[in-house]
Length: 354
Image 1 (cartoon, rainbow, N blue to C red):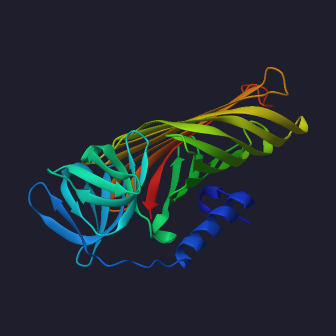
Image 2 (image 1 turned 180 degrees about the vertical axis):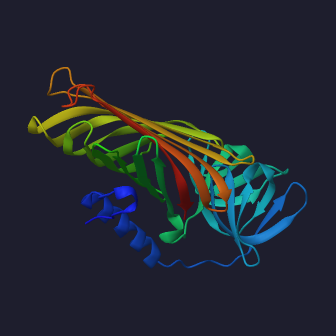
Image 3 (image 1 turned 120 degrees about the horizontal axis):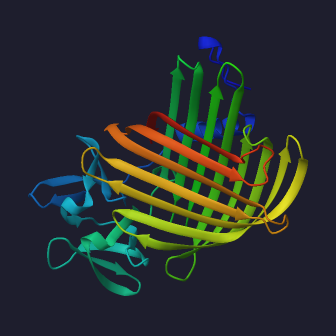
């Protein structure tokens, strides 16, 4: 199964597992419906403006409010003086604590009172970094981002294309992320491609900022002589920093991999799994998001082998929900079939956020 571009004799075959996953997820998103609650929440800004609607979420320093007249509007959290709502929310603050209860105005603008089963808690506005209505539907909890890019250099006759996706689902107990990447390079002599899919599930524990992590991944890479690699594992993670401007997390665990290489054949290994992810966002125009992850896999069963992988995405919002982005990846394996064991790529493209 593939997608073929005939321009300049360029043929692009997407890997069957990657395409199946991405297409299935897109169809799932389009098929689900959402039930909205009454739009009775009132947001008051420091300049005195009042906006009535339905609070959809607070994430990455942006409060999303669904209104009848203007659709869904995005408001910088630091510009909000007060929120008046009668609904209950799952609220996270900078010290890592989570509260399931109501949000009320405190004794002064920019300060809030959270009421839950443990009593009353007072927070400055910028201490509140995430807020989601508890009764939100599946579709409302889902965040999806898709991007695609293509470039061609006439002088060298090199064509490069990419397809990237990131789908996130979060509820009161866990957050789940699926990311996928497919890149293809075609020149006058050969065509090479690489792909990777990662599925991660993180479940909060009773300890503040600590979570249990389980993960699975699939990877192919022609440059490294890798026909395929499957991995599955589990570990513990921690949120090291979480503010309305950035987030830093890390995970340590074990994973089992099964791989097939062009020269050395099939093999199985047990590896350490060391992962970190850093997200940051700038709300001033032009809005900018940064997402960087770095994984290191020292082998426990193959002496001296170390693998690593990294992904970087920068995106600028052009118009609402439409972005220009730059994506880059790097993969290293000191025991790969290729001479250097290193592969990397950089692409630009246009992305859409749901």
